[in-house]
Length: 79
Image 1 (tube, helix red, strand yellow):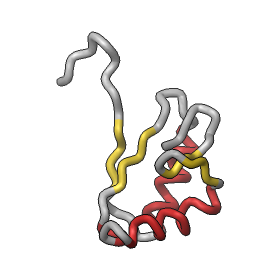
Image 2 (tube, rainbow, N blue to C red):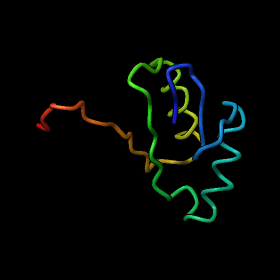
Image 3 (tube, helix red, strand yellow):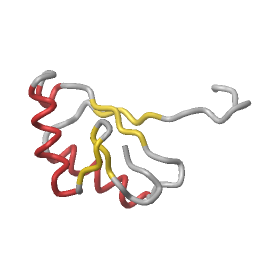
């Protein structure tokens, strides 16, 4: 997850950008390696550049099954 302050979280623990990939690789090894599906959640106010930096690092590390998680606003209809 990435929040609106640019903080990055792996599961429920905050991680530095430089520590994201090594820590994620350790978790992913137990769940199928780089073929494991990752879900990335971003606050709707998150800086686009920060989110793209995270996504770029995931891709460069070989994680290609990445899904962005979003929530509908209350009252919004799916199209």
